[in-house]
Length: 262
Picture 1 (cartoon, rainbow, N blue to C red):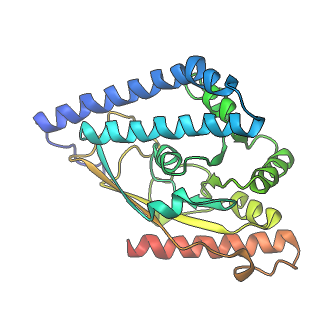
Picture 2: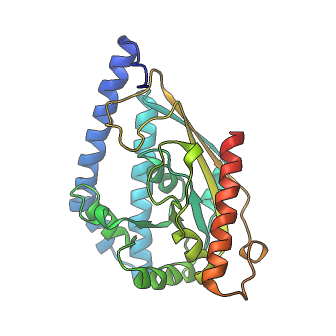
């Protein structure tokens, strides 16, 4: 059965217009960052690390502005529990479920100096490709290079954001994790900071166009859970492939329980 269409009223029409406006701002903002703001931040004096940190801070601030804009025009509202835990995250693997298009925007907005693993397709995106390259984010196109870059990033004290699902999941009940996140945690020997993102009502899901908005404003409930020590989740002396499967199974069960109780 297809979903019921929302009633057409002034509130709905306003949010439809505002959503289109916000995504236009986001696309143009990506071009502005790529062509102007990030090159300026990158070429200001400082060490290589200071330059990359500065670029990521600019992107984080821009994403915070975008979240504020979407809230100001009443497209969405974001509630963050454990904001300080996100801000203070260092050298951890930050994982989250992936229900909407703007999940990564929300996480980077609240983790100012984080790195993230992105799909190769994003590198070719005309609006975001330049941003991810300037920020030094990690492409998932080469698994061996990915692990080496992740290890270096963790050694530099930065956290890395990964969505274990690998793509947006339309239905939380059919949650399925790929092994990439668990493999990074095991092979890099880092702790895990789990985050849940629950938009109510669901919006910007996989396979839905941006203009398919819910009948009323969506509330994004972002919950930062306690950090998980890797040594308490798997036997780090066991064979890495086995430990990866064990950890992935544990994380999937953990999130399935969280989602069922949400």
